[in-house]
Length: 200
Image (cartoon, rainbow, N blue to C red):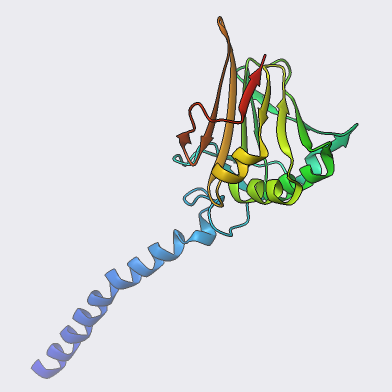
């Protein structure tokens, strides 16, 4: 009788000992890279960037990115409609969308026109790896035209500073004193960068 009781007790102890390990395994599987598009930066490494993109490289805020099918090449310019919220026009492009910008190269320049319903601020986010690849293949400068300002980024600046992982973010905002514009790479602002020009 005692032997049976001891045997059952041992089995119970063994079962209870396995429960935490099983729970940990399930938890790890539930938060794996494949099941959590928000927890990992889809712009880094060789991950697909076609679904969710963070607005900044150091935040988990995510939004749908615009693919190549959302870009129309018209009269030598790539035209895209921005998402406008609270007077801010936001454009986030996938790798494929950036590659399509090559179709808009004219005289050593790529022009990206942002239709933003007269927004007072624009945010343009591009995958660094794709942007660097585009710059090297086309040797073209990038010009972003919007209702806020026209921003030019030289090919030399892109190839030297954009890198191969993370996000390149361009912002411009209308202010009382003109236009405040900035260029960010992986969450760090490139201040006074040679080759970054803003025209209201």
